[in-house]
Amino acid sequence: MAGTAAAYQADEGGPLDVDRAFYDRVAADAGRELVDRFTVPVRSGRAWEVPAGHVCRLVTVDGPQVGDLNVWNRHDPRERLWASRTRQLQRAHVSLYDRLWSTLPFLRPLLTVTGDTLASYGRDAEGGRVHDLLGTRCDPYVNRMLTGEDFDFHCHSNLVRAVLPYGLTEFDVHDVLNVFQCTGLNDDDRYFMKDCPARPGDHFEFFAELDLLCALSTCPGGDLSVPMWGPGSDVDPAEFCHPIGVEVYRVDPALLTDWAPPEPAAYRGLHGMTCPLGP
Image (cartoon, rainbow, N blue to C red; front, side, top):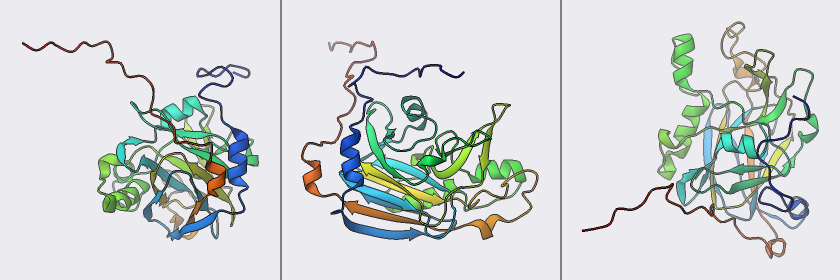
Protein backbone atom coordinates (compact mmCIF):
# COMPACT_ATOMS: atom_id res chain seq x y z
CA MET A 1 0.00 0.00 0.00
CA ALA A 2 1.34 3.41 -0.97
CA GLY A 3 2.55 5.39 2.01
CA THR A 4 2.90 2.38 4.30
CA ALA A 5 5.89 2.89 6.58
CA ALA A 6 8.80 0.47 6.50
CA ALA A 7 8.72 -2.00 9.39
CA TYR A 8 12.43 -1.70 10.24
CA GLN A 9 13.37 1.87 11.08
CA ALA A 10 15.73 3.67 13.44
CA ASP A 11 15.92 7.20 14.76
CA GLU A 12 17.85 9.76 12.76
CA GLY A 13 21.55 9.22 13.28
CA GLY A 14 20.94 5.59 14.22
CA PRO A 15 22.55 2.39 12.90
CA LEU A 16 20.65 2.42 9.61
CA ASP A 17 21.86 5.88 8.62
CA VAL A 18 24.69 6.06 6.09
CA ASP A 19 27.35 8.76 5.83
CA ARG A 20 26.58 9.55 2.21
CA ALA A 21 29.25 12.23 2.00
CA PHE A 22 31.91 9.65 2.89
CA TYR A 23 30.75 7.18 0.24
CA ASP A 24 30.47 9.97 -2.31
CA ARG A 25 34.13 10.80 -1.66
CA VAL A 26 35.05 7.13 -2.07
CA ALA A 27 33.12 6.91 -5.34
CA ALA A 28 34.77 10.07 -6.68
CA ASP A 29 38.30 9.10 -5.60
CA ALA A 30 40.55 9.91 -8.57
CA GLY A 31 43.57 8.46 -6.80
CA ARG A 32 42.27 4.92 -6.42
CA GLU A 33 44.72 2.22 -7.48
CA LEU A 34 43.71 -0.82 -9.54
CA VAL A 35 44.96 -3.94 -7.72
CA ASP A 36 43.05 -6.72 -9.49
CA ARG A 37 41.15 -7.13 -12.74
CA PHE A 38 39.73 -10.18 -14.48
CA THR A 39 36.75 -11.34 -16.49
CA VAL A 40 34.26 -14.05 -15.50
CA PRO A 41 33.52 -15.94 -18.74
CA VAL A 42 30.00 -16.91 -19.81
CA ARG A 43 28.28 -19.65 -17.82
CA SER A 44 31.06 -19.87 -15.25
CA GLY A 45 32.00 -18.66 -11.78
CA ARG A 46 34.95 -17.03 -10.05
CA ALA A 47 35.78 -16.19 -6.43
CA TRP A 48 38.10 -13.39 -5.29
CA GLU A 49 39.05 -11.33 -2.26
CA VAL A 50 38.25 -7.68 -1.59
CA PRO A 51 40.17 -6.27 1.42
CA ALA A 52 38.34 -3.97 3.83
CA GLY A 53 38.45 -0.37 2.66
CA HIS A 54 38.76 -1.35 -1.00
CA VAL A 55 36.25 -0.86 -3.79
CA CYS A 56 35.02 -3.56 -6.17
CA ARG A 57 33.34 -2.85 -9.51
CA LEU A 58 31.32 -5.33 -11.60
CA VAL A 59 31.09 -4.38 -15.28
CA THR A 60 28.96 -5.61 -18.18
CA VAL A 61 31.92 -5.52 -20.52
CA ASP A 62 30.26 -6.23 -23.87
CA GLY A 63 26.54 -6.72 -23.37
CA PRO A 64 23.69 -7.30 -20.90
CA GLN A 65 24.34 -10.11 -18.43
CA VAL A 66 22.94 -11.12 -15.06
CA GLY A 67 25.41 -12.03 -12.30
CA ASP A 68 24.68 -13.95 -9.10
CA LEU A 69 26.82 -12.63 -6.23
CA ASN A 70 27.72 -14.33 -2.94
CA VAL A 71 29.64 -12.54 -0.15
CA TRP A 72 31.38 -13.88 2.98
CA ASN A 73 33.63 -12.56 5.74
CA ARG A 74 37.00 -13.70 4.39
CA HIS A 75 38.12 -14.89 7.83
CA ASP A 76 34.92 -16.61 8.94
CA PRO A 77 32.56 -17.93 6.22
CA ARG A 78 29.85 -18.48 8.81
CA GLU A 79 29.34 -14.73 8.43
CA ARG A 80 27.83 -14.19 5.02
CA LEU A 81 25.19 -12.24 3.13
CA TRP A 82 21.76 -12.42 4.75
CA ALA A 83 19.50 -11.65 1.81
CA SER A 84 16.17 -11.68 3.65
CA ARG A 85 17.29 -9.33 6.45
CA THR A 86 18.90 -7.04 3.88
CA ARG A 87 15.51 -6.86 2.12
CA GLN A 88 13.99 -5.71 5.40
CA LEU A 89 16.70 -3.28 6.49
CA GLN A 90 17.34 -1.84 3.03
CA ARG A 91 15.04 -2.86 0.17
CA ALA A 92 14.34 -5.76 -2.20
CA HIS A 93 16.35 -4.14 -5.01
CA VAL A 94 19.49 -2.34 -3.88
CA SER A 95 21.31 0.67 -5.27
CA LEU A 96 23.40 3.63 -4.09
CA TYR A 97 24.09 3.80 -0.33
CA ASP A 98 22.32 0.49 0.36
CA ARG A 99 24.20 -2.12 2.33
CA LEU A 100 24.34 -5.90 2.28
CA TRP A 101 24.00 -7.21 5.85
CA SER A 102 25.47 -10.34 7.37
CA THR A 103 23.90 -13.29 9.16
CA LEU A 104 23.40 -13.74 12.89
CA PRO A 105 25.02 -13.49 15.34
CA PHE A 106 27.13 -10.90 13.46
CA LEU A 107 24.50 -8.63 11.85
CA ARG A 108 26.67 -5.88 10.40
CA PRO A 109 27.22 -4.35 6.95
CA LEU A 110 29.44 -6.42 4.68
CA LEU A 111 29.50 -3.78 1.96
CA THR A 112 27.95 -0.48 0.89
CA VAL A 113 26.94 0.31 -2.69
CA THR A 114 28.92 3.28 -4.02
CA GLY A 115 28.23 3.19 -7.75
CA ASP A 116 25.36 2.08 -9.97
CA THR A 117 24.92 3.23 -13.57
CA LEU A 118 21.42 1.70 -13.55
CA ALA A 119 20.31 3.71 -10.51
CA SER A 120 17.99 5.79 -12.67
CA TYR A 121 16.11 2.72 -13.96
CA GLY A 122 13.73 2.95 -11.03
CA ARG A 123 10.49 1.02 -11.37
CA ASP A 124 9.28 0.20 -14.89
CA ALA A 125 5.71 -0.15 -16.17
CA GLU A 126 5.51 -3.79 -15.07
CA GLY A 127 6.94 -3.09 -11.64
CA GLY A 128 10.42 -4.38 -12.49
CA ARG A 129 13.51 -3.07 -10.71
CA VAL A 130 17.19 -3.99 -10.93
CA HIS A 131 19.79 -5.59 -8.60
CA ASP A 132 17.46 -8.10 -7.04
CA LEU A 133 17.33 -9.68 -3.58
CA LEU A 134 13.84 -11.10 -4.12
CA GLY A 135 14.87 -14.32 -5.81
CA THR A 136 17.88 -16.54 -5.60
CA ARG A 137 20.29 -18.44 -7.85
CA CYS A 138 19.18 -20.90 -10.49
CA ASP A 139 20.24 -24.44 -9.60
CA PRO A 140 20.43 -27.93 -11.12
CA TYR A 141 18.02 -29.41 -8.57
CA VAL A 142 15.10 -27.20 -9.61
CA ASN A 143 16.14 -27.61 -13.25
CA ARG A 144 15.94 -31.41 -12.91
CA MET A 145 12.56 -31.11 -11.19
CA LEU A 146 11.10 -28.86 -13.90
CA THR A 147 12.69 -30.39 -17.01
CA GLY A 148 13.81 -33.90 -16.10
CA GLU A 149 17.29 -33.02 -17.39
CA ASP A 150 20.66 -32.37 -15.77
CA PHE A 151 22.61 -29.16 -16.42
CA ASP A 152 25.87 -28.44 -14.59
CA PHE A 153 26.27 -24.72 -15.27
CA HIS A 154 23.46 -23.12 -13.32
CA CYS A 155 24.53 -20.35 -10.96
CA HIS A 156 24.51 -22.60 -7.91
CA SER A 157 26.93 -25.01 -9.57
CA ASN A 158 29.10 -22.18 -10.90
CA LEU A 159 29.39 -20.78 -7.38
CA VAL A 160 30.14 -24.21 -5.91
CA ARG A 161 33.08 -24.66 -8.29
CA ALA A 162 34.24 -21.09 -7.70
CA VAL A 163 34.62 -21.40 -3.92
CA LEU A 164 36.29 -24.80 -3.78
CA PRO A 165 39.82 -23.28 -3.91
CA TYR A 166 38.96 -21.35 -0.73
CA GLY A 167 38.01 -24.47 1.18
CA LEU A 168 34.26 -23.84 0.93
CA THR A 169 31.63 -26.28 -0.30
CA GLU A 170 28.10 -26.37 -1.66
CA PHE A 171 26.82 -25.86 1.89
CA ASP A 172 28.49 -22.42 2.00
CA VAL A 173 26.78 -21.14 -1.16
CA HIS A 174 23.83 -18.97 -0.16
CA ASP A 175 21.06 -16.72 -1.41
CA VAL A 176 22.45 -14.16 -3.81
CA LEU A 177 22.31 -10.58 -4.94
CA ASN A 178 21.25 -10.82 -8.59
CA VAL A 179 23.36 -8.00 -10.04
CA PHE A 180 21.98 -6.35 -13.20
CA GLN A 181 18.84 -8.52 -13.01
CA CYS A 182 15.40 -6.94 -13.47
CA THR A 183 12.65 -8.58 -11.42
CA GLY A 184 9.47 -7.96 -9.50
CA LEU A 185 6.23 -9.49 -8.25
CA ASN A 186 3.26 -9.77 -10.63
CA ASP A 187 -0.45 -9.30 -9.87
CA ASP A 188 -0.55 -12.86 -8.52
CA ASP A 189 2.34 -12.04 -6.17
CA ARG A 190 4.62 -14.34 -8.16
CA TYR A 191 8.24 -13.65 -9.01
CA PHE A 192 9.00 -12.54 -12.57
CA MET A 193 12.22 -11.79 -14.47
CA LYS A 194 12.65 -9.37 -17.38
CA ASP A 195 15.31 -8.61 -19.97
CA CYS A 196 18.47 -7.24 -18.36
CA PRO A 197 18.63 -3.47 -19.06
CA ALA A 198 22.43 -3.21 -18.72
CA ARG A 199 24.52 -2.18 -21.71
CA PRO A 200 28.25 -2.44 -22.40
CA GLY A 201 30.13 -0.46 -19.75
CA ASP A 202 27.39 -0.38 -17.13
CA HIS A 203 28.69 -1.09 -13.64
CA PHE A 204 27.74 -1.84 -10.06
CA GLU A 205 30.32 -0.84 -7.45
CA PHE A 206 30.66 -1.41 -3.73
CA PHE A 207 32.91 -0.52 -0.79
CA ALA A 208 34.10 -3.46 1.35
CA GLU A 209 33.33 -2.82 5.01
CA LEU A 210 35.19 -6.02 6.03
CA ASP A 211 37.76 -8.29 4.41
CA LEU A 212 35.49 -10.07 1.95
CA LEU A 213 35.44 -13.20 -0.12
CA CYS A 214 33.16 -12.69 -3.10
CA ALA A 215 31.99 -15.15 -5.74
CA LEU A 216 30.11 -14.38 -8.94
CA SER A 217 28.31 -16.57 -11.45
CA THR A 218 27.54 -15.39 -14.95
CA CYS A 219 24.01 -16.76 -15.23
CA PRO A 220 23.44 -19.35 -17.99
CA GLY A 221 20.27 -17.42 -18.86
CA GLY A 222 22.45 -14.51 -19.99
CA ASP A 223 20.31 -11.40 -20.29
CA LEU A 224 17.13 -13.38 -19.46
CA SER A 225 15.47 -12.37 -22.73
CA VAL A 226 14.67 -16.07 -23.28
CA PRO A 227 12.71 -18.07 -20.66
CA MET A 228 14.75 -20.72 -18.87
CA TRP A 229 11.70 -22.87 -18.08
CA GLY A 230 8.15 -23.25 -19.39
CA PRO A 231 6.73 -21.84 -22.65
CA GLY A 232 9.45 -20.48 -24.95
CA SER A 233 12.27 -22.27 -23.16
CA ASP A 234 13.07 -24.39 -26.23
CA VAL A 235 15.40 -21.57 -27.37
CA ASP A 236 18.96 -21.95 -26.08
CA PRO A 237 19.90 -18.63 -24.38
CA ALA A 238 23.63 -19.24 -24.99
CA GLU A 239 23.77 -16.54 -27.67
CA PHE A 240 22.43 -14.04 -25.14
CA CYS A 241 25.22 -14.69 -22.62
CA HIS A 242 28.10 -12.28 -21.99
CA PRO A 243 31.04 -12.12 -19.56
CA ILE A 244 31.21 -9.80 -16.55
CA GLY A 245 34.35 -7.88 -15.66
CA VAL A 246 35.60 -7.51 -12.08
CA GLU A 247 37.87 -4.70 -10.88
CA VAL A 248 39.25 -4.18 -7.37
CA TYR A 249 40.70 -0.81 -6.32
CA ARG A 250 42.70 0.37 -3.32
CA VAL A 251 41.17 3.60 -2.04
CA ASP A 252 43.33 6.63 -1.21
CA PRO A 253 44.23 5.98 2.47
CA ALA A 254 43.58 9.63 3.30
CA LEU A 255 39.87 9.01 2.68
CA LEU A 256 39.77 6.30 5.33
CA THR A 257 41.17 8.28 8.25
CA ASP A 258 37.87 8.37 10.13
CA TRP A 259 36.49 5.04 8.86
CA ALA A 260 36.68 1.73 10.70
CA PRO A 261 35.19 -1.71 9.95
CA PRO A 262 31.83 -2.21 11.67
CA GLU A 263 31.71 -4.24 14.87
CA PRO A 264 29.51 -7.34 15.22
CA ALA A 265 26.07 -6.92 16.75
CA ALA A 266 26.18 -5.76 20.37
CA TYR A 267 23.77 -8.42 21.69
CA ARG A 268 25.75 -10.89 23.80
CA GLY A 269 22.92 -12.52 25.74
CA LEU A 270 22.20 -16.23 26.07
CA HIS A 271 18.72 -16.09 24.53
CA GLY A 272 17.13 -16.45 27.94
CA MET A 273 19.11 -19.55 28.90
CA THR A 274 21.17 -19.99 32.02
CA CYS A 275 24.32 -22.04 32.21
CA PRO A 276 24.12 -25.07 34.53
CA LEU A 277 26.38 -24.94 37.54
CA GLY A 278 29.08 -27.55 37.95
CA PRO A 279 29.12 -30.06 40.82
